[in-house]
Amino acid sequence: MAWRKRFKDKLLVMGILNVTPDSFYDHGAFFSRDRALDHALRMIDEGADIIDVGGESTRPFSEPTPRAEELARILPVIEAVRKHSDVPLSVDTYKAVVARAAIAAGADIINDISSLSFDPDMADVVAGSGVPVVLMHIKGTPRDMQKDPTYKDVVGEIREFFVERIAFAKSAGIDEENIVIDPGIGFGKQLQHNLTIIKELGRLKELGQPLLIGTSMKSFIGRIMGTTALEDRAEGTLASVAMSVWNGADIVRVHDVARTRRVITFMEALMASSAPG
Image (cartoon, rainbow, N blue to C red; front, side, top):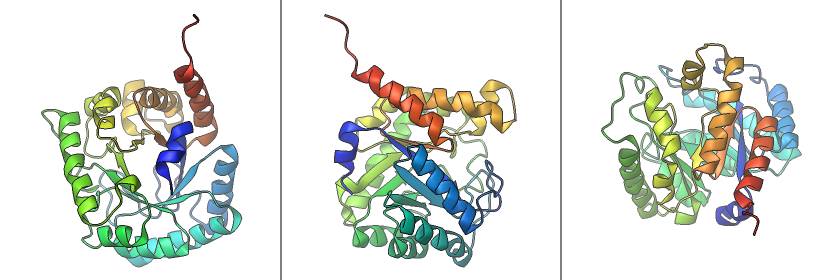
């Protein structure tokens, strides 16, 4: 996939498709293949440029899902969506076996929350297949990442992390053109860390890699809004998307594709505008 060409003219919207029984957002509404397919096609119609399929919950304090179970969840969905659309499919996994099978089934991108560090075979799978990979920053694991994460300079430390991970990926044979970075909002970060990352995305943009950000419906937004209700996080999510795009994000990973696409349309017009002469 020619990432650079896609970014030249368009910001990308990645639609989230969780095929887990315990998704924090949809509570397993798309756990069946047919419902997942319908939702994927709906997001594509609404303007999703990429569909990100996940078969394991990585919310705070979650436990790992066995590989066989993760495969049983995602492979029928990947195959079904691929039969109906050629939209790029991303697979949210850190397991090499899952990634290899997903690519064989038609997936185009691997989205690894561990930046190739949880499974020693993942880098070889990505390099051998030639697919793009999203390297995400995480402090710890989903099971323990929110147990009082601390930083002296959150963006500086994330930047150093990516310098090392990008170098590792390239040394493993992954084409630099295929590397996307994600600062991992909510993955081992406190509220202020998340806000600082959004404000200072430009420091990560300097690394020269496409930048993905995923703020959608996350708990820090609810804390700012003073609510635990998911439906009350929508406006904060859209605001975070707008600010992330303004500060350099190339891809936004979201649940609500339709409204996000409208925000992106406005932001593209705003950023392309010039003062009247």
